[in-house]
Amino acid sequence: MKNIVKKLLRESLMNEKSILDVSLMDFNIKEIIDSWLMSSSETPVMMFKYEMQDEYNLSPEEKEHIMDMDEDEILESDRFKKWLKYEAEYKIENFISEIQDYFNGDTITIWREMTVPMDWVKGLSKGG
Image 1 (cartoon, rainbow, N blue to C red):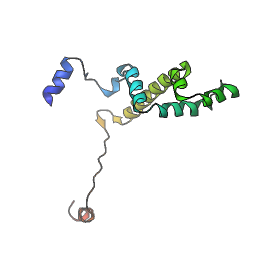
Image 2: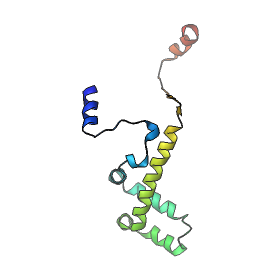
Image 3: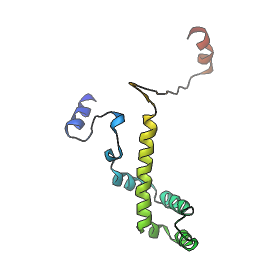
Image 4: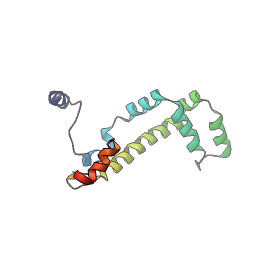
C-alpha cells in the first residue's frame, strides 16, 4: 500500500496536503457533475424543479413552463446547467466547512461504531 501511495504522489495523481488547505479548486467540478448525472439524472432534475418553485426571479408562467418541461429539455437548458454547477460547488464548500469543524488544533474528533453482544456490554462495567 505504501508503494502505491508513493507512486500516486510521484505521478501527481494524488496530492498530500492539510485538510485546512483544501479548497473548491482541489475538486474536478465537471467530473463530479457528470458522475452525479450518470448515477441518476432524474434526481438532479427533480431537485431543480423543486428549487425553481421558490425562485423569486421567475414569474408564475416561467415556473409552470419549467414544471412542464421533460427531463431532456431541462438537462439541456442553460438555467439547469448553471444551477447544477452552483449546487455542486455549494455542496463541496459545505463539506469542506463541516469537516474543518472537527479539527481542534492538531487533533481531529473521530467516531467508531461497534456491534457487540449484550453480555459484552454487561461485562464492560465489571472489567472495562
